Length: 467
Image 1 (cartoon, rainbow, N blue to C red):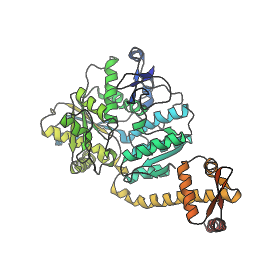
Image 2: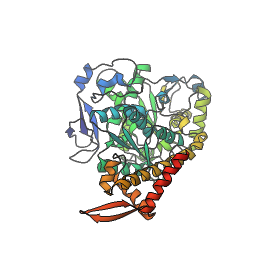
Image 3: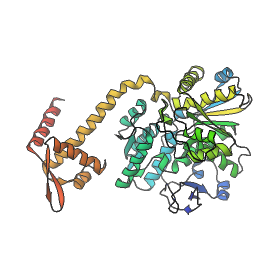
Image 4: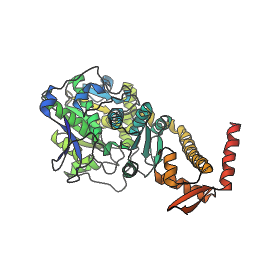
């Protein structure tokens, strides 16, 4: 029932392995459905993510940690402070790893298992890495997360405890995405980055289905935007509900960005078709710090088609909204999520939103992941990173203590749990420290442990006897 279609030339593609771009014109692909067949499909089972499995691409293995079915909280106290009557928070912090990305992880890992993958790669500014590493842990899959320099510490803590391998690359997630794409091509690992896998949009559209079942269709639906994918996914969900005859009205979509990083909002203001990029974007709301949003144009189209709005808010407004949501409604939202309420306050004050309108703000993740209290975990992060590096070098030395080996052979013996480039980086460092040496033979470069390397291995063994 599902097929991939090019957003530009309309080319259609079949297959269970999700493609990112059209083979004919190179433009983004998205999943489409036979609407007549979709009309006969039904929501089944309890109120949860997989209740909507017949409205997503087919999977055989349903991986779940209990995601979806999140509450829609009516913010009675907070609404009064801005003179509103019907303000709701769709609370995605109630998902297993406390964010909306668990929906993506459930569908992507199910697809990866269907296709027989053992390793998953993703670029992430936090929530996705936490989600994918948890779902990989449940299935015994290897998870490699590429993160930018600045990541919320609570999200890193989750990745570490779920035993993901973390690679730091780039200042912002845009650069991490380039790295994740390279690694996936080199290793053949499953691509779990939401910007590079169209299944992520299908997972997130279930938020619209749930809200429809909870309160019908609101007049306004507010979403914070990084890549723009979440807003587009929610709009896609409501559009599908309209096409199959379940609803006869659509919400106005409000996309929110931080003032210091607002490429989609700037494009909306200038009536441009593509995001307007800034050389050095910045915001403390790290979850929406994205320089070049992959779904920017689609998000813009959704906002315009819905007769909605794109709004920017300052970091000060974001943090003020975060405190108000917690103080008045008992929901601890991460800064990116709180931006939705900050935008609503602005629009109400400008008289754009009527006091009788029904409004939904999407709370994507928990503030527990980004609060300053969690800065104490940075020490653990550094210790874990050093420990991982030493562990890999020790494994290489032990392999070479038994037999000389070339790089590809070492990569295989280490279980292919990192890139070949990373193996050679370790070998170069070991060589600089005089622990291994190399020589040419049989057309290959072989590595051999030195006397000093053997001495270091004995020191490792002595240290373990003391622990």
